[in-house]
Length: 308
Ligand SMILES: Cc1cc2nc3c(=O)[nH]c(=O)nc-3n(C[C@H](O)[C@H](O)[C@H](O)COP(=O)(O)OP(=O)(O)OC[C@H]3O[C@@H](n4cnc5c(N)ncnc54)[C@H](O)[C@@H]3O)c2cc1C
Image 1 (cartoon, rainbow, N blue to C red):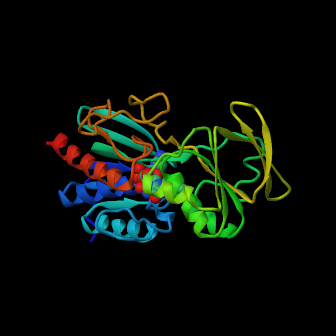
Image 2: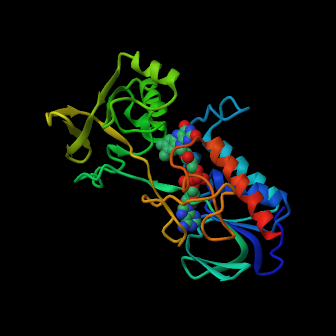
Image 3: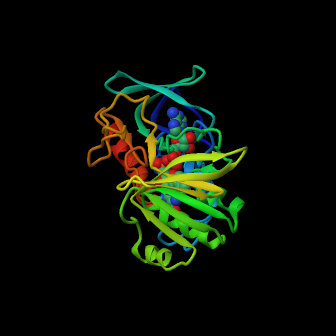
């Protein structure tokens, strides 16, 4: 059951309704904080579209949608108020104990503390014609769009722990997978990497980059350049799945960040702004969701301690 808005001042406002924000919302509600979660799009964030999560402790296999919508239900049941389609555009400290959160369209909300869990948007390759092929051969999620390319030649371009699962997913769909990365090796779960390397449809192309895209309406061919020799090769492929990490959604917050915009936090996940906490992928780019969920919960505990 929803709690009523008693007055205009919340204990905590959570910005971003992915898994980190939802975990923060559940914990905040359970501690009886007057909590409000603002999500600019749909609750669940990037996890909501993942077909299967099979590394969450205690849960053998669960769909991303099922996991996140269960979290939404738990957050509501705990008493947190959740608004979707509310994009936060600014955050201002009104005084020592009050923040104002501003939304696109003019809505303003006030709280004694804030948790930022806004994740990030995928980085692309930065190539000409990339936007033209968006969803027509250029994708950022193999688990979401891979099924369209069953049995065809596809590319994983980039690095990071999610590439391994993405490549295995595409192999399971009968694809021939070219793994193109500037690195000399693949990073991730060693047992899964061994599985990848022993698959006859898997081709590792380390030390190289995708440098050109071509095709009419849909992507048909790419150019791959060897970073050492400069040699170029053309490959006929139906899709490139880009895994180059994210650009964190932190521009609305005037807190300390690293050079790429990830928010810096202390051991209590507090940012450089006292009373403003941060959790999830806006802080750590490449950690498994169970860690980010823990951090979201941790942020709510820290916010409660801060309010006291
Ligand atoms: C293709 C792909 C595959 C992956 N596979 C795995 C996997 O197998 N295992 C794993 O552990 N992780 C995986 N991940 C990573 C995982 O999805 C992320 O780590 C996780 O989603 C991060 O959660 P989050 O809550 O921090 O951010 P997000 O899920 O990005 O959620 C952030 C939310 O904040 C909202 N938001 C952003 N800005 C604003 C704003 N200004 N105002 C209001 N709301 C805002 C967004 O709309 C979004 O809903 C994968 C990611 C991708 C892209």
